[in-house]
Length: 189
Image 1: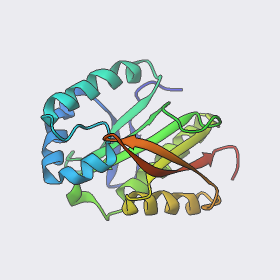
Image 2 (image 1 turned 90 degrees about the vertical axis):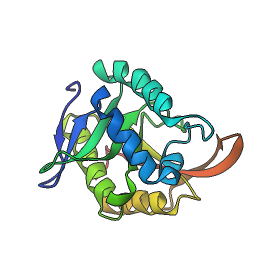
Image 3 (image 1 turned 30 degrees about the horizontal axis):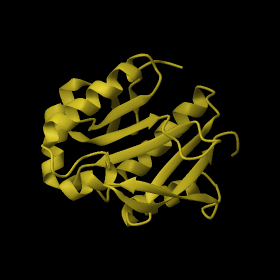
């Protein structure tokens, strides 16, 4: 599979490999709506300055992205190059059968424009094109209604069973939070 691919989502969006250059864009997007970032990135500590946390995140994921162990992209508008959000595949799964975990975060002013839905489909298509038929998990908090609806919409588009999910409890800021893990089995159509 190609390492650090750029993916064209459609005429409006492109997925560019994550790099250090997007740090300031991430910080700007965070301050647009911190609650959105905290919901999407439960590893963010509320009481700490966000900039060093984003630096730590980038320094942790970029070496793994550089060797194709995980894939993280920044979502950008094709025409302007403006930063829209992040989407990625890592191996922090919740089930024994999942191989990839997909997560995403969209800046508030770009929400409700189907950015995530289009990006999810692009990545799943890319995995299939590269014959990576392993199972992709998407784990969402039941409290995060928007993300949950986005994942359920993807489940329907991919003709999978929206009622086939695993319930898990993840510790978010030292509190157990109920999550649902949906499985995208790329072997089936």
